[in-house]
Length: 165
Image (cartoon, rainbow, N blue to C red; front, side, top):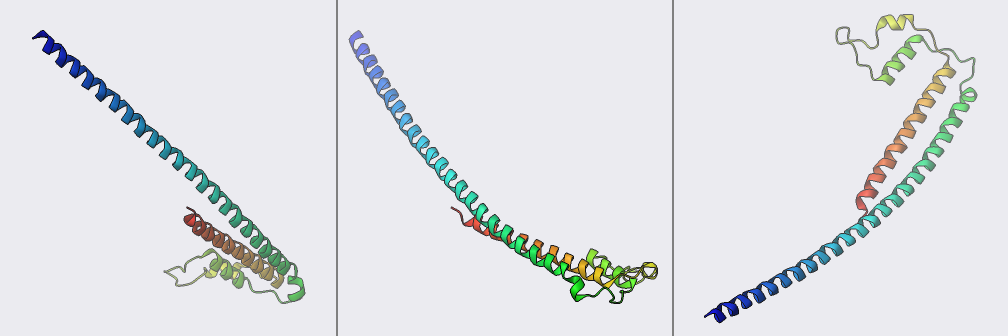
């Protein structure tokens, strides 16, 4: 009878050993698969980062070139104001400046008065030379066009980044 118990114990020990061996082999195989997947994902992420960086450089280069072109054109227009608006041109009334400033700042009419801008400011406003108005308006448009180019570049960058895989 004791021999049967030893045989069963030996069989159990053998089965346990085989089970442990299979468990360890299976775990190492699965770990190798996980490690390979992680390595592949890391390599893929590095490729995507590189492509996104290249896209950023391309978009930024185009943006800088376009803004430089817009800036040069705007500065040329501002520089030419005295040619197109002679210094002896009549000054514009102060109300024009106040109204233009209100529009540029996005001021809303006073609901109580229904007026824009405040009539007291208009009465006290000094006249403004036509050359100053032309130069200021040209500078404002220059800034507007630079902002438009910046927005266009940002939209292009977002589009390009979303297509990088």
